[in-house]
Each structure stands twice: as structure tokens, then as C-alpha cells.
Length: 162
Image (cartoon, rainbow, N blue to C red; front, side):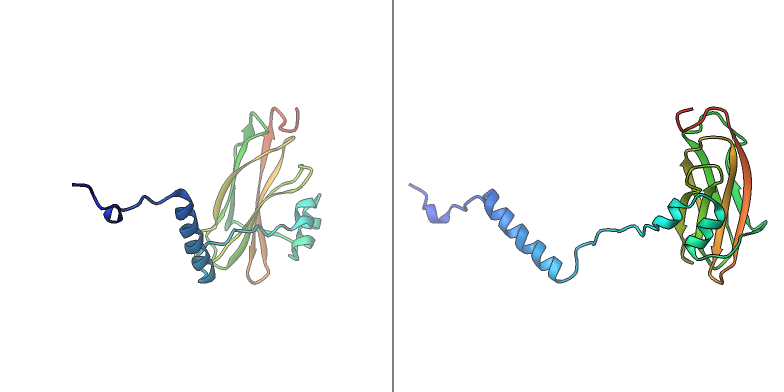
């Protein structure tokens, strides 16, 4: 007995599958179900600032005031300036931004974190330091206050070709 060819299911070809996938992707996009890419908000003037006063002006913030409620972490002595672990933290409510600044770097702003009330304002990263310098943790509050803490980090081998 020979099988009836109409009863045998045909295999889906690659072309059919791509066509169906494109149709499904088009429907998802039309319904707004596809993820959108994250775009960084890049403040060129802030990252080009050479000192803290210029940085605060570029960010539209006031003069920073030292506070015990902001903490900065980092080693006392960094053996290699190309990878220095630093951190900034505060438990204060109403923080809008947390900054990590390296005073003697060509660009004083090393990191900028936008914060909401749903996020704990505690950040760590690694920065490049060309020489020994003060490291600042700065918290910009929702009411416009700017608070900071500082720590001196000594670098034995510079991170900028030293």
C-alpha cells in the first residue's frame, strides 16, 4: 500500500520560519512589546570639567559641603593606578545623584550615578588614577544640597603610563 502524499506533513522550511518570525516580531513591535535600547544621558560638559567648581557648574549644582552622612571607600595606597577600587555611599533619603571624583585626574568626574528612592545609594567601581589624589564621594540631594566626603589615595605606580 502506498501512502497518500497529501497526508504526510511537510517540513517547515527555513524561509517559512523566517517569514513567520518577521510577522510575529512586527506584531510585537506594533503592540509595543519589544524592549527599547537603553540610551545613556551623556553630559559632555560635566565629563570635560577639569576641577570640582567647573563640574558643579556643569551639573547645575551648588558648592559641596562636607558631611558625615556620605562615605567614600578606597585603599590608602594603590599599588597600580590603572585599577583602583573606589566606592561612594549614603543612607540619606532624597538622593538624586551620586558622583565619584578624582581631584588630580585630567577629568575630575570618574563616575555619575542617577538615583531614585527605589535604589540604595551605594556604588563601587574601579577608576584609573595617574597620581596620588583626593577621591571624593558626592551626593546631590533632591532639595539642591550637595554633600561630600573625601579620602586621600596614594598611588605607587601611575595608571596613565607611569
